[in-house]
Length: 179
View 1 (cartoon, rainbow, N blue to C red):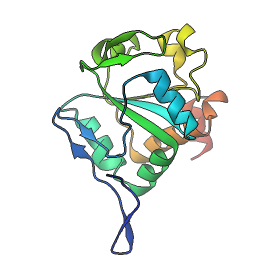
View 2: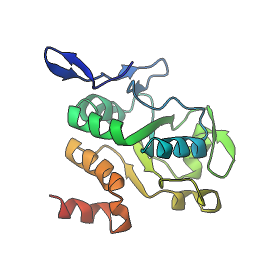
View 3: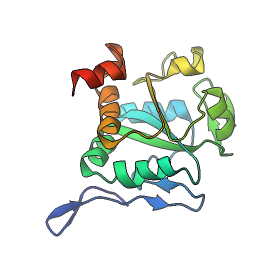
């Protein structure tokens, strides 16, 4: 089930978020994964995309708004979908994930390992997994967004990563330069 390409009344019809059995909203175009981060990152890169991990929690109103407000905007959905594979994880989840260093642990423990304490949180990683296993968890990320971002700043965050602006400065600097 794809989103963003079907025509409806002459306009693009974008896919609506789905409320899953585990109580999380999900975009139909989110990454279906075996939860092996290095492989997901490599596959994203092979497809000309970046990997973003979205941490959520059942009942989180800001997670819901990320789906029903931000991703509902065609320009945001289109930009993110074309340039990123988004892996959705549950901050208190039990699914086993293989981290970049090969450690296998439940989602909840992975969140703790990376210091993820708020939902939604987006983690962004380098374009390739080479060398990530040797780094400390937080040093593996090129950027992180914690909490709900209004649509304009949400899109700017993804542009910041897509353009590799993190190599030149902070998100705050990027927002100032692009406002």
